[in-house]
Image 1 (cartoon, rainbow, N blue to C red):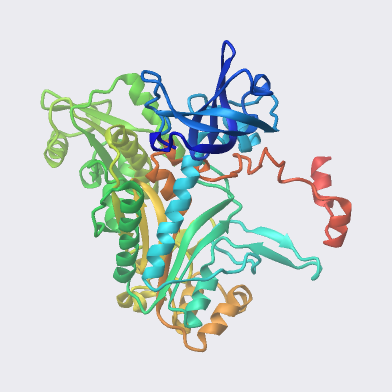
Image 2 (cartoon, helix red, strand yellow; image 1 turned 180 degrees about the vertical axis):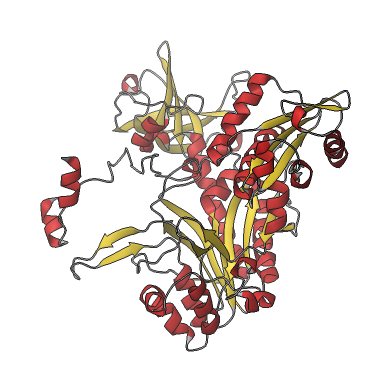
Amino acid sequence: MTEKDKGKKAVLDGWVHARRDHGGVIFIDLRDRYGITQVVMGEKIKDAHKLRNEYVVEISGTVKERKKGTENKKIKTGKIEVRCEELKILAESETLPIEIDDRITANDEVRLKYRYLDLRRPSMQKNLLFRHKFNMAVRNYLTAQGFIEIETPILVKPTPEGARDYIVPSRINPGMFYALPQSPQLYKQILMIAGFDRYFQIARCLRDEDLRADRQPEHTQIDMEISFVKPEDIFEIIEGMLKHVFKELLNTNIKTPFPRIPYNESMDKYGTDKPDLRFALELIDITEILKKSDFEVFKKAEMIKCLHLKNFPLTRKELDDLIDLVKPYGAKGLVSIKIKDGKIESMISKYLKKDMEEKIIKKLGAKENDVLLIVADKPKIVNASLAALRNHFGRKSAGNDFKFCWVVDYPLFEWNEEENKWDPAHHPFCMPKEEHLALLEKNPEKVHCYQYDLVLNGTELCSGSIRINRPEIQKKVFKVIGMSDEVAQRKFGFLLDAYRYGGPPHGGVGIGIDRLVALMLGIKDADIREVIAFPKNKAAQCPMDGSPSEADDKQMKELHIRLDAVKEKKK
């Protein structure tokens, strides 16, 4: 309400956010999800003295303008107050275990245990309201583009999709199990075969994987699939949708089309397929220069790359801390070089010939007080280590811009050293590039596919591809990864059978709503728990409801399950 409502009768329901007793006159701030209104109660109001924070009350009274000088400019209702004429206490509250105050944040475990209180905080209500508006904007845009929203099953056949499935036992079919879907991938492909050429769904996806800030056991994605398309058609639809959503919710005009970066270029320049483009730091390959040095580490390395920090003095302690930063990525060490008086200053200087120093300085355009951070090892270790360093330095001055890009032309396969075999780099249903079909059986390492990822500020938002719709190509891909016809039929039979009856060319994506909403709201570390109503903790547990929990003996008997192995482990 505003000053335009003065003189009106009002009935307000909500929680007592704060109570102030001014010598017989009681002021309360009444709160609900729409905001706060000040209520004034005189001595005649029965039970006014009983009110405490978080009591649920109903107030009847008259809207009055506040006296000049007593307005509260921080809230929308700050120019008015309600003079209470009747009070009803609808529910009382005990002393709270956490404060309903955005300025005071409890630790994560307490917040999750009392999530119903944590969700009363204005910031959490704002986050979930923003998420609701996001979903509505997406639905409105895609519907206008001719998409149909179709729900796919939650109880599905277990299939390998890169993470562990959550398994559900069937009571009616003893010894048989459903899986909870990691994504609607196979079902949306079935919908394309069925003739629904533009499908989408706000889909729940469940994966039994280790957790971190941007991962939960269950997440939500904008899942979509389109028939008779090329990658550029999908890019145009996604970019249009995001442009609409950012304008609608943040009044921000994002620049389209997004840059397209081939996978190999992204790995070469940024060391990752999730490049943060808010800063220009790039990795520089100096293998050819340093491979001929007398330094044993360089001589044995498959790749040598560096990060060039311009006019960036580092202390010995800072360098030591950087070594700890790259160790988790497999790096055995970090070599630093400082440019001093036009020359290289480093612990490895004695191993470098003069012409090598000159070539490095010339290639990098290195100047006084510049620092080079070098990693030498296998390409995977070098790229991952330097990518972490790049983000460490670059994000300190990255700003709050939204920098999108598409990473395209992924390899179809990756070599599994432990099992000595080819694995799909993403999944085995990505269509190989037309010009690479002839290489499938003889040179799988050279095969790239129509796989594309959307990245925002170094965070992967979605992954998608054009799918294989021709059974003869699908069989060749299965053969490369060592999957027999029998195994393929057992795991994906219903999809392979459907393609026998004419499946159109199609492709799609799945965009992570939790991650995107967290990034749009500027939440620290893009912690998706801040935009999910009831998330799990790092142990995949819910402190509020106590899940996961044991099932009783009757349920276990009905499901034909015994916990012998678990009991043995406990012993």
